[in-house]
Image (cartoon, rainbow, N blue to C red):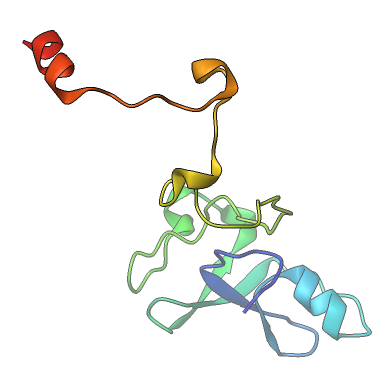
Length: 122
C-alpha cells in the first residue's frame, strides 16, 4: 500500500532490481540505488491482478486503461494532506454544545407556543 498516492491503480516493476512498487517515491525510499529509466514499463493492475507492458514513447489515450479489465489507471493522484478537525461530538448529531448568543439577547432560544404557531402556519 502506497503512502504517497492513496488511489494507485497499478504497481510498477522497477527494471533495475525487478521489484514491484506503487510509485517511484516508494522505490527511492526503500532502495539505495536510483531508479533505472526505461521506455517500456511493466505494470500490474490492482483490479484484475494481471501484468502488462506499455511503451511510453508511443503513448495515446487507449494506453490509460488496463488491456485485461479496462480499469482506468491514469487518474489524478490523491495524496495525503493534513486535516484540521474539531475534537468532540458531531454537531449534526448533538447540537446541545452549540449556542447562538445572537438569538434572545444571549439568553438562549425562547420556547415556541404550539397553539400560536398553528395559527401562523395556516
